[in-house]
Image (cartoon, rainbow, N blue to C red):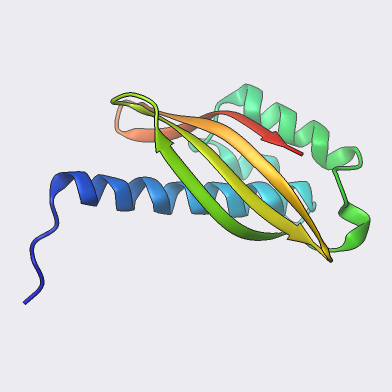
Length: 116
């Protein structure tokens, strides 16, 4: 029988799932496969507005194909915040995402995202 999950590991799993979903949705929005309003509740309005603007402009490498999430790294930045970095591929090129998530009430919310 496996050991019971500690509250810390359960929280880490929760954060990882949230971040993975957030980043996949972010890439789908930038690729114009989803609407930016689908991030409501997962990101602040300034983040949603920035992604909306990026989706209508020419985001990095869009001409190379669909963005595919590759690696994710999450580092705690205090009790209720974390820094996120990830890589994603478009064709043969690799790009980066960086951001910050914060726990607000009972939800983790993206307060900053940068795609490069």
